[in-house]
Length: 450
Image 1 (cartoon, rainbow, N blue to C red):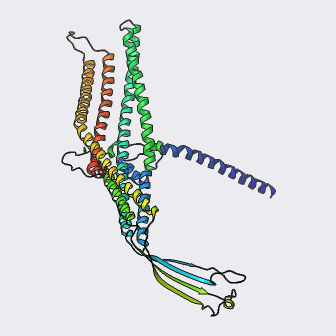
Image 2 (image 1 turned 90 degrees about the vertical axis):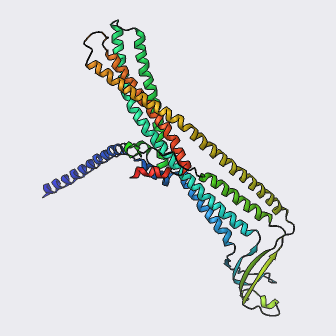
Image 3 (image 1 turned 45 degrees about the vertical axis):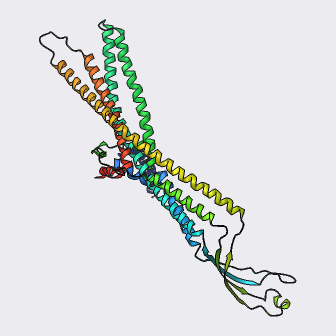
């Protein structure tokens, strides 16, 4: 019996050890699998923009500004609604009683009439409209930033793949040139030139790798995702080229927001200017419950105080001389002038930026076309070199091509491919910026969701 118990206890101990070992193995596997899965996660173009709309810090701050402006607008209207206050002031006094033996009191008061308050209400509504427009501008800017970062990261990824191939070809060319130099066929200059080509490919690869890391970090901040897990999907990018012809330019939300802000400041200035020399009427209701048993009120007063007391009335005030309000009116008038000039400045800057983009578009299109033709020509030259290497001329009139020519053609084709990618992105950057100015950027982005 004891042997059975000992065997059972040893078996249970072994099971516990096996369970702990299994747990450690599973945890290790999870620690290895989860980062690997995160590192290979794919992010579509539309998903990146949609996540940025909801997670961007600039959008969330603009949303908070809208909530604050909406609360400020409600505050300017609610001054006409009675505010209710209840309380009590029970206490002991010795000697002649001071004050009133209030057991319970309730007060309600509100503004009944003011020449300035309607201007303040209009100002708050204009400020709310400006906040809504600023939110729309923040959304548009986040869409543009995310789209451009995603497109540039995708283009850099293609360039890095081409550079990796170019680097391998450059290294192979370097080996061939060194062998030919050792054999006395080529001079050391050709070997150094091949080594320089490989070094230049390394420099560009490091530069593009740094840009890609920065773009992933920016996309991570915009979307709320882990930056190291972001991998673009080229097939999710809208294939249609942004249409530029026939698009009507719209007023940017940032410009409209500036004018709404100037309008709000103008209403405040008008309201502050009407504070002096104009009456203000207030309304109030007051109820008090007295208890004379707490102190000797009835001993000092001829008539006993009654328990329930009620008053209602209006208060009229006419500020004849108030230097503080006069100074405030001058300051708000200056703020209104400043806001108006600032709105004009924002409009002028926006117009200049759009004109600059429109004027640069033809040149960028021409450069993209040249880069595309150069890449196409480099591909055709590579094909011709490969054909000549596989089928050398039989007449012996022309000198046969060497592997050096093949490596040089491959390096040139990959380099021209990278140049074409950069030219295409430069053109697309201007096109998307113009789409934002015409209000068609969101519709172009939504094509990626289909």
